[in-house]
Image (tube, rainbow, N blue to C red; front, side, top):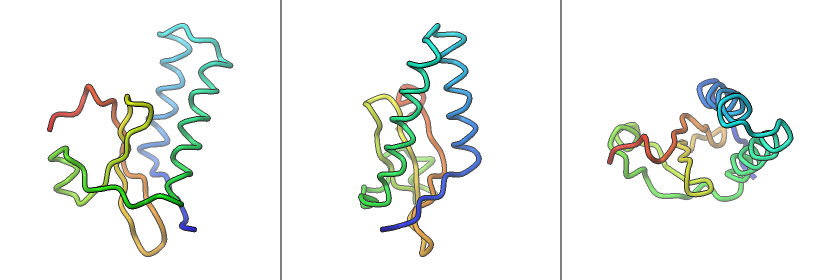
Length: 98
């Protein structure tokens, strides 16, 4: 089992998403927290399945990142290092250009 390290960039984006879901999207706090928890559990699962292909998005592929999609809407970019897996960035799929 590998260690999963989440960058401060990703932690910040998840916090911003939580605020967006509750304040802008008018989702209840409970529903927003449940979605964020599913996302965090998904990230944690990378310790078991960290063999996804290199990203098809040019900016992340150039950095050697691998990509994995969460619920068809969010893409996580990560790299495999001797210490484990570092989740480096995340984006909504609509915001990424191939």
